[in-house]
Length: 638
Figure: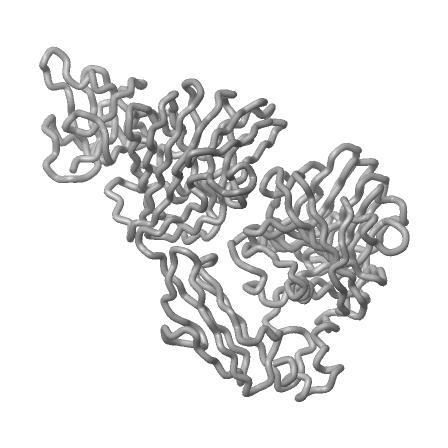
């Protein structure tokens, strides 16, 4: 296909996308922006990850270690292209400020069309950025974890090279784009901090050989060139932001124009050529390969598309400008075209990777599991016989359980589907852990609520069944939190399976009132419709402080318990009131249900209306009250 393109257009025209033409010439945008304009914000402390900016498609992140009077000022959505910011630092060990796109949607870079950044800035002199510094576009990918940089300027002298790229790097190639040559390097960070905890991961660098302070960065062209050179990115693009980073010194940066865009067609597209956009639905369910990966195609070009399902998925047909269920299929390019490959989960599909912890790398964790040790915590993992043991040396100084955790991300959850999570667990001595399925970033929304699980020294099996009531989310994260005790924990045979369309028998509104999250700012969107069971004799305690031997989610049980009303057997607090509501329900002790042979139970519907002492004949969720103790609990009657 490259030969066809060259044959039909002149060399200068064919390469025009590599000399992007911005809608606004950023180099003419030199007016100083106001830090007090409407919408402008000043940040002086660490953001603790991405934070979205008000009335803006962008997010920001600020990180500073040491120093004083460090700050980032965003000039608001109505000045300087909407992403413009300034930054100041005073002798930090490390300072970084960045503004731009935050995605983390489980999608590859090809899903974000053609990404451009138009910019204009001034900065302090060379030598004011410490021992290392970068100015340009920056980001991460997941599922393969990669940290990447497109560097157009820095605070050092000369041109950046392997000796001043942190840890050294190897040149992999070079190419010309946006009017200059970039050298491409690959480095490796060995057991260093990352967005997924302490990991070993590659770094990719495009270093411009003629430094500049204004112009356009054609971000997607760098992604394409890296992949051409074998520097593959992960299938989940986490972010793409304009970065200023300084490893010390006293300096400043100030943008007068900064705008990032996602554009349907490459800039400078030659007449008579068109773009083919492809995507998959849901994200992470598969991929599309093309017979030609050109950025654009002359009219009349035929391109063959092949839909390839990920493990556990199957192809369900094309949509957009291609229809039917045949793959491969051919599309003729005579205008801009957009094609989506749709996939569906197979019933019984396993969504957890390496659930037996028998990978050949990373002490059995492989690339799928990550042991996060935040808050100065220390722990190690050792795997054998289908299980991993987490040996805990130091607890988090923060006091947060979730600052020491074993996690797996990239789990697709689809609205309206039912899932079953099972795992085996024990501890060196009696203790609790927490388990949760949630978003991997702020706002940390729970899909399977954060649940405390009581472990003994005997390996037991735990099972949680839940409906996904939130919107589709392709990148959910399963987490086991250990940061409340140094007793070693062993976990094995972790499984999350899709079992079909959701048919929850419990009341969403009733269950949701008992939910809480593993982060202070978290919400609970998918946990209404959760039922769970704990096999064996261990107990599982909901994070709202409600415990039951058979219910890990707010006291609702789908199995377990020996009474005819399926009620748990763990003592809990009382609730006094004539008409209990679904918002005030707590578990009840089984031994209190009958006293001296006297029946003391009274049933209510979820609106608090009394139904009498007899167990309801109609299946459903009810509130039961011990009249003598005042204790109440929700129960499922089958």
